[in-house]
Image (tube, rainbow, N blue to C red; front, side, top):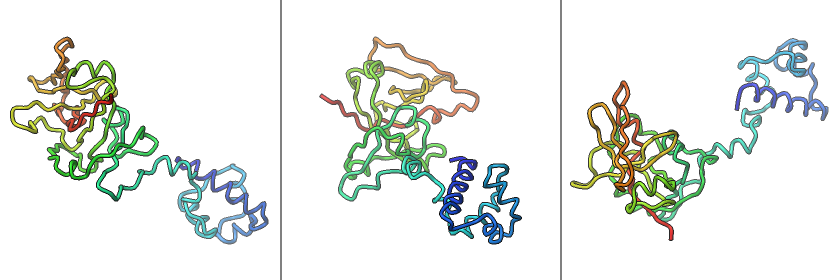
Amino acid sequence: MKFKSLQENLRKALWARIEERELTGLRLAEQTGFKQAHISNFLNRKRSLSLEGMDKVLSVQHLSVLDLIDPDEVNKRASIPPPSEDEFENIFLVDGGVAATQPLIMSMKVREIQKFRRSFLRKLRPEMHGKRGDWERFVAIKVEASDGMSMYPRLLPGATVLIDRHYNSLQPYRKGELNMYGVHMRGTSIVRYVEIAGKNVVLRPHNQAYAVEVVPLGDEGNISDYLVGRVCYMGIET
């Protein structure tokens, strides 16, 4: 919520008290030490209050910033739901672009909630590069139709994949086995095998009918910027 919106909600709260005869502009001026004209101009949208001024009004009227925020807005941006208390962990299923770019998943971005056993998640070994420690570790995405076929038969269109965003390294998870990754491409997350060739990222499909993609690494040459995370679970609905 923007500062202007908070000021407008404060005006509404003050006008509600004035209309209920709980407050007057003169009384508010006396409480805050502001001139009555200053308070009148604020109430009539002719001027704004500084942060210090807002703090003073909130204090004398026994209001909190939370009183000025729409509860629906708070709920939309809350990190929900609380951790489950059984042997299962709540994992958020989100769009590919959210998985690639949002360190913390807000409730407004959650499409579904998936359940995974805590014992399974705890066994997964991270391999983190860069500043990922404050990212929610696990997210799930649905594989799009074309993307699923590019990894056929390991994946199918509509499959749900669990991505470990604390594993953004090319280090093989198991010796002799290629990792599958969620890769940040074209504003979403696609699933591919990944390797480095010179200053390029090579994205390899499993299905040989699909083309290999080669993407320049960029000036900093940081592969972890492209890797959303390692695919550590695949679920196919039947």
